Image (spheres, helix red, strand yellow):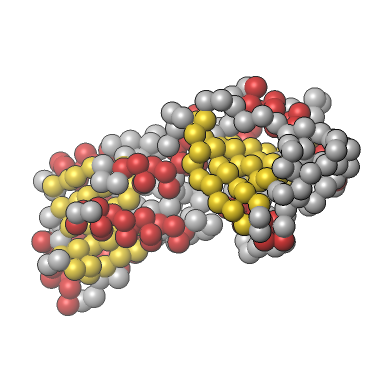
Length: 307
């Protein structure tokens, strides 16, 4: 790992601190380096407040401000170039007179898309783009999917027995352990909305809350034939991510329409003699992660051509 990659890795570490409160804005980290050491760093803490670059410059002590003309600022996402709730970060970087800017990845948001980088180049600043690009895009895959496809990032999620059932003879079955249930609630706290089908809602009355974790519960959605899911409505309401926790029919309907980005399957060391069969994971997938907790495996699948 070279110096640029090492400092960009720190940007990513900082950016993840904004996972819950930065949305619907992307998670971004920034690090300012001069004379071989970090003189300032920051991340986007909360939507509507200072961006990562603003917080990084604010953290530079008075003695170190003299080093800015020879400094490099590392940013995991292209600096913004437009006026939103805060002024453009590209303008701030220009005004600080830094020598070089290293950008992890280009911002796909329509108001940016290379304009921030161009502002820096026009000001005579040296710019490098694409350092740890895959990792930087991975961090904000929900944000990018939302703006590129005009729909939420969709996570299909279910728990199944070792022999592939999601219930016991049609009756609700506790498959998750207390610990893996906590992990499910952690995921809920990180996403904008959660959806189940009408049958699941009427049979199990799921709370779909984050009662076993800290954070805000996702928006609760129920669909059926009379109330189908409208992606345009979700996009208009700025819902960037959606968990689907419904029954097999609901989950399969999303797969049939190729409306998914991630599939998370928990498999427990339990068996039943009959029940509702779990959905089949599509063939064109890759394993993004796999782990075991309390004897249960949790495997995350993504499409082969995705991040």
